[in-house]
Figure (tube, rainbow, N blue to C red):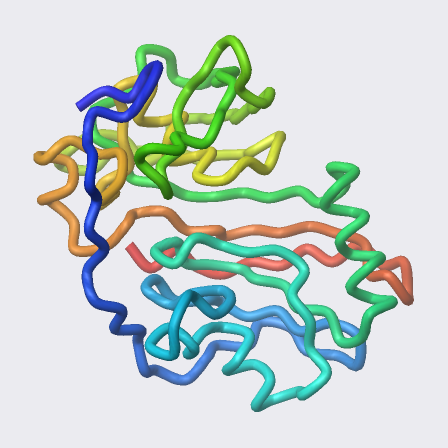
Length: 228
């Protein structure tokens, strides 16, 4: 299955929502900011219906009632997730994301190996309305989307990549890698049957974040070890 101009799969049925029950791992905590290592399988924010109320922000509100969402990770993506404590901090951090001042790094295990050891994937992305929540590559009306990648090793089914998104489109890393014929292992939306079957989870992890603390102006360089 190659996603180029559109998705080849329709009528996607999501499995039942069964989030992990392990305690949250806190990476950073101060009066302005809370950062966790979100596990794969946990929503960042509530989904539709009472069955999807359990999520990262509902759990962190048990730690600090004043936390607010700054950004999101896909449910099946693990890694660093920032929460603001108060609206002023949320506004300042959100502005850093909007201006591209937050450096993000991801680790992914993909099917096969890219043609080049490193490069830039520059493919515009548009929501695939008939097949939501999927996105698609659309060269006419898609939003500009860029992802830098570099091979960082191998595994039995392909390559291990370091990914640096330069834009922040929904499913950007997942669809960009599928579009160059190297889908992320365990990706139930964009991977081939073979690439989906070899991993029980989506092999995508946000392992590094660098941003400016909105109060102290200190550059915070945070990391969370990759679990796969």
